[in-house]
Amino acid sequence: MTAEVIVGISGGVDSAVAALLLQREGVSIAGLFMQNWEEDARNASGCRADEDRRDAVAVCARLGIRLHLRNFATEYWDQVFEHFLAEYRRGRTPNPDVLCNREIKFKTFLAEARALGAAQIATGHYARIARVDGRWRLLRACDHAKDQSYFLHALGQDALAATRFPLGELTKPQVRELARAAGLPNHDKKDSTGICFIGERDFRSFLARYIPAQPGPIRAPDGGEIGTHDGVFYYTLGQRGGLGIGGRRDGDGAPWYVVGKDVTANVLYAAQGNANHWLQSRRLAAGALSWVDGAAPAAAFSCSAMTRYRQAPQPCRVEVDGDTAIVSFAAPQRAVAPGQSVVFYDGDTCLGGGVIDRSDAPFGGWSQS
Image 1 (cartoon, helix red, strand yellow):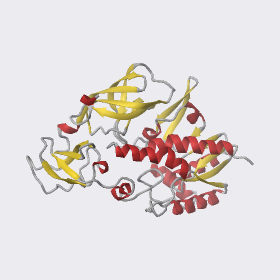
Image 2 (cartoon, helix red, strand yellow):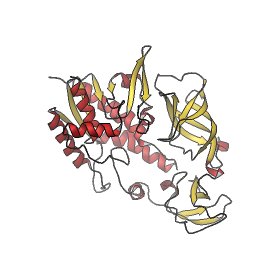
Image 3 (cartoon, one colour):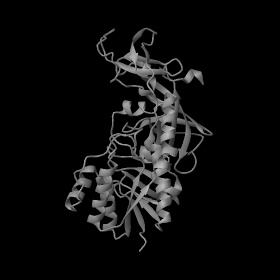
Image 4 (cartoon, helix red, strand yellow):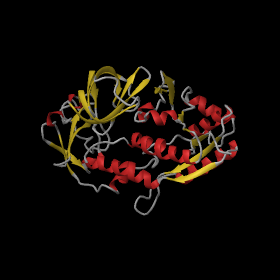
């Protein structure tokens, strides 16, 4: 019998409970495990795909449902990882989870589920979907601490119409308790972190396999040399650790933070203090815009926005001109990083978002545009 819904079973507890809840609703389901990264001599690392696959098999056996196994490694490399590397080579800090969701989980996976005869897919994301006035809306999860709508903002009407998020009303402790009570074998499994589908690892050594180290100077904003970096690609704005200048104490002796990168000159800039003005900006420009409803709410509108995951949404004004948005915040924002996503909200409703190109921080590139 063809399943109504194909659940993306990752091997983790969230997707397992998503399947459990749908099954308890009486929905005909099957699971699908996606392998999207392959280890070889070039990229051997700590990816735990084999462990996750075994856990996915065990979960589906416990639930008594069929598990499909699919390898989307080529699609992941072409549509996500190549872009990830290209952004780092430009000195930006990409967010692969956003692209991974749009291209793999809610496009490639959805297409495969439809090929298997299913009408919908489901995942263990913490987010909600609602239909209002004939349109689909993406909503923040009830548990804002776990909400993942930031990573899902690039989904459009077709994907939302074909998707279920069973965990949107739950907290993580509730999910684990449901898994434990149901006897799911992974009820106490540690949550996965790291790069989407690649997993946890020493990030700098992993990136160095694809972007060789190019050491250069670390300079203070006044141009004085204060240390040496391993390669500007490996650092992000606001970063404190890994600079190797912790022993140097200038001014008030505060720690040093990355405040800028000059890829062409191979120079990394750092300044002291977590809240130093070199990291502050009130405006940013974003491109590659995606709107959940298919278009921006208006050419100019007020809303709130997040420039990084788990940040509290910040009041702002958005002006849209084609595929570019200028976002002006009511209060200064810290460490707005080109390559990251800015995501717009109206209350709990996610409107969409885009990729940050520049900001008006001193090293943000605003004057170069």
